[in-house]
Length: 165
Image (cartoon, rainbow, N blue to C red; front, side, top):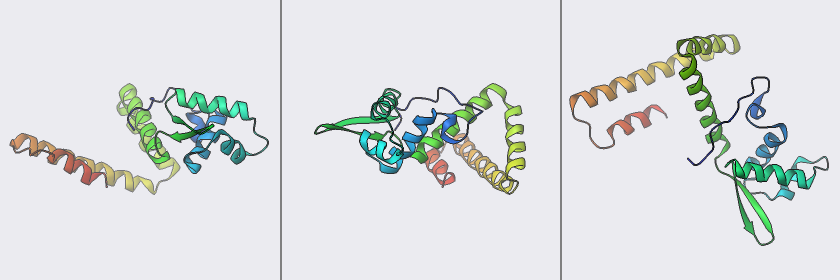
């Protein structure tokens, strides 16, 4: 969904979802994504360790206010649904972080990203190079179509959609 709130903070000293959420928020989101439409009690049960109902409810309602979850009443309980699948959420957050770094730091961010890929998983460097070539080809095709004046409705989207598969 496009109504999601942009990332407000990205904590470099944390890992995983805790870079974006607080510790309990991250745990709750993992449970909600797994269960898809739980109640507060369902989340408390999944978290275990005698998780406090009121604390869990408060955090889940804050996630509703942040437009991360959607709440709807069914009978006497509220069901909580994620606005986005975990995959879509992670894609969106990764893109927002990458775009912010590129806007703020440009070529330095690109160079650091390549260095990080090399340091963390050198085998992914080939994948990065393949993706860069593919995106360059798609961009070139879009420019050629646009410049030739033969841009048919949907052409640019079709070329872009092919490259994202």
